[in-house]
Image (cartoon, rainbow, N blue to C red; front, side):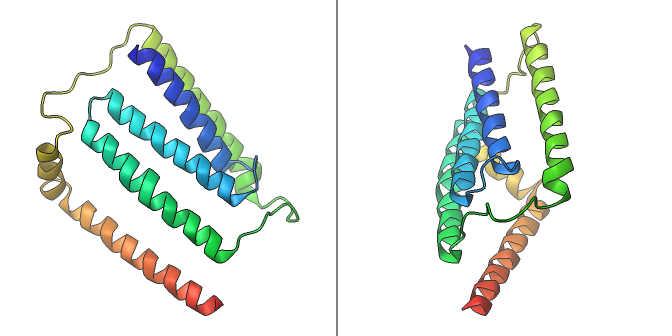
Length: 167
């Protein structure tokens, strides 16, 4: 049952990531919704790993709050369809499809390994609990946690400055 759920989540995550990255759909709102599907698939991976708390955090924080923020910014900036623009550069022409092929190869490799009897590593009883997460976050990962929070503050200030300049 876990293998079937993993395969379905992998296919959904890969398909939604391709919608976000590749120039398949040029509507920014559809790309944002595909990103929300991808974030929910990542939460599903956490549930498969028996880390329910982290899975629920993924849904609440990323698929909920961050996606609402992204959609709010898209609506605030009044982003239109980009069909009138030509191809938009090196990433969409060469690097995007190359990364997509690499992700598909990684997916096929992981599926073949799981079908050949490779087992998922079993976590301990305390894995994914609030106490373990807090202990790791504020001891071993304290400096990366603070660096990410500073990066988010700088990004927020930059977004406010860009929005004020446009008005």
